[in-house]
Length: 317
Image: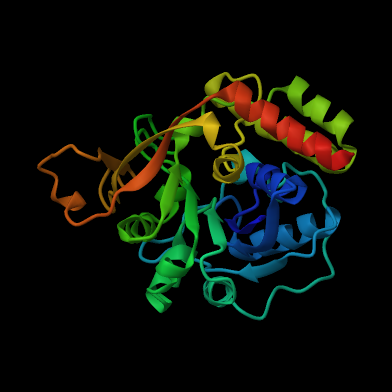
């Protein structure tokens, strides 16, 4: 049986890498993209989501999400990392399609009623839509098969502050509500994403093996890699968002820990993800009553890379 997937996304170069993987994978049925701010503004994310799906011949729905965080003022989008258009200035033709009549939260609620216990929600941007979803229909937590979140840094340092990862930092209050909810949640933090690098050679091979999907991704990756080279000295770029989907399709590539999660919502450490492994105790009261979730704390890079290339190449055939 295929995995029925909704991706909550702010496309975004690594978002595009994840969306391409979802389209290509024979075991994934992509139902929809729901959009959120982060790498770009929400209306730009909606435009980009529609453009990608049309460009790659996928008729999944696109439902627009929240335009601002729950509590804090919105941060400037990550144009420095992803380019002003979100695609590293690579031109993807605009779609003539319209967004869905329902907003993101209501779309997910309705889809979860249509397919109870079948949908995996992969959130690869700030978690505002998920917090709104829980607010409108707390019972949705019982109808989703799984919730996979790309975000946070558990044992590693952050990427927008010394302690905070971008998706969590962009709406820490929403993230804290999502982590407090009793639903089957798996977290893909920087701990599992940073070990993987898409090198220029890897992206060129991808473009050669699958021109339709790989050529625009390789062009985007050139822009993305310039950021990683200048800021981290990496020879390539990190495909963060793909991890949320790879957990479904190649779980053996990851090492997991179980534990409770919470988020710092003010002060100098705002956006920091705190993790208390299951079976341990501390005097931090923020974990009281919190459910244990699964956290992907490490990755086998070679297994991950081999899977990504295999899936994309198979699609080309």
